Image 1 (cartoon, one colour):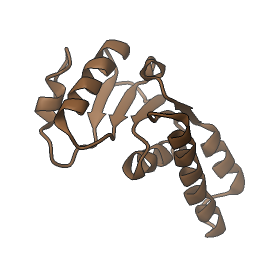
Image 2 (spheres, rainbow, N blue to C red):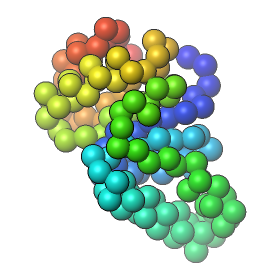
Image 3 (cartoon, one colour):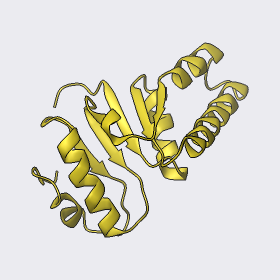
Image 4 (cartoon, helix red, strand yellow):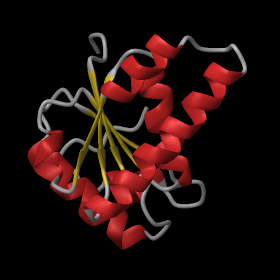
Length: 137
C-alpha cells in the first residue's frame, strides 16, 4: 500500500479519539465520525486537551498542536470516508454493528482502502466477511 495520506476513524470514544489523536499528531489528515455533532465536538475537545497537555509538558510545540487539531475533520456521514487510504473502526464491541459498518465502508471506500478494526474480543475474520475484500493481514 502507498503512503497513508488520509485516515478515517469511526467512533470517537476513548479509543477512537486516541487513534485520531495519534494520526493527526503524525501529520495525517484525519476524518472522525460520530453519530451526532455534539459527540464529535466532545471528541475534538478531548483530543485538544491531551495535545495541550503535551505542550504544557514541553513534548509538543504550540504551533504543532494547532496544526494537528487543524488536521481533524469531524463528520456524522460515512460517505465522508470516500478517499480515505485507511479507515479504523472503533465502535461498540458487538459483531452485527461492526459487520454492518464494514459492509457500508466497503461500498463507500475505494478498492485500495484498508479497513481495520479496533476490536479486542471479536473475530476479525467474521467482521471482514461482510466485505467484498475480506483479506486479513
